[in-house]
Image (cartoon, rainbow, N blue to C red; front, side):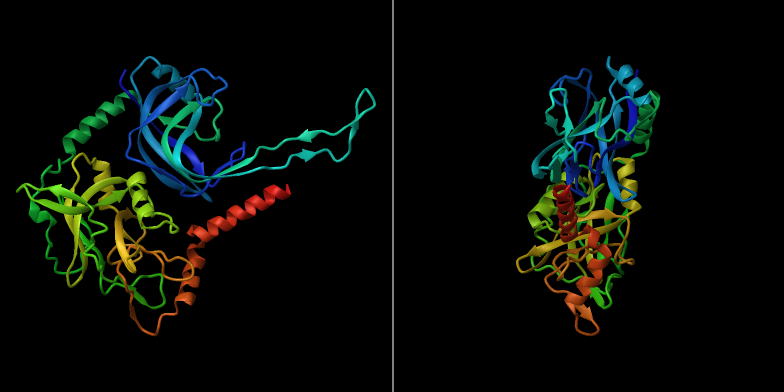
Length: 413
């Protein structure tokens, strides 16, 4: 039998499990798939012991569900002796996924006091006894790395169930992809990475040849979240903190490049520049390698799709906007990442921005050491308060406040 495709949620963020574990929103990161999918075929005293690799996770993405998020995955069950048994258990919903986590960890454990019976009871010997009702300690994960998943009979979230496809679908999908996907050149023309000489602010464009170009932001663009016009400033480093890699071009010339990342969200605002850059390396997939520069219209990017990208990745880039992540460096804000997003902050340029509470600390989708301003003087405290009110649930301060309230309730209980 060919491999059997599967899809479904692997773990919830923002929901506490019955045994006291809570993975906070955006706490999980992951590297480049594939990841192993294992199955515990016989339980023992060791969690996830006696297990065998039965498939793989080929894609991971974070999806909103009501008041929290789930990590949704796709992959296959391998053509091997265990395949039919695992597929039958999944279809009958008697096993489910449990995420396998690794460091670096940021974990907090809170000891929870047990409940006691209010009135003592008298046993057969005439002694008074009190029944203790233990509660599991609470373990909060603020950071962890996904290394895979294991199918178990008692998962943390029993309601997370997968859908299985037909085995033939994998082979058919592979043949369609091979037939329709243009192959980006391994050594693209050096001209692709030069200033594309655009005549106006241009959305990101992907050509059939694999060439990519467009603007991240225009100098005259105003972010929609502000009462005054806040437009992207300039880099003082020549975007050295973004273009940390290089591409070998067809003429033998090596060009400094950065990457466009998909299948991830912005790094948490509490992160510094190094940690934020690592976030994109660990949670997303690279779809294109690009150079960046400035023209009279705005910040341009130009380069090539990365060899090996799928039709789905290319479509995701074409259907999305691009957003930059700028972090404090050398006394200003410097670009450290560019990723595809769904909701733009600068609609004409298709980018997005967020502001930390108290001051403009991190500009996601705009860059430079100085914020350009049109209109009256910028009251940063008032502005930050208004923005924080709309995105407060996504700030580090709000996350910590919620965690503190949960710990207080746990201690009182």
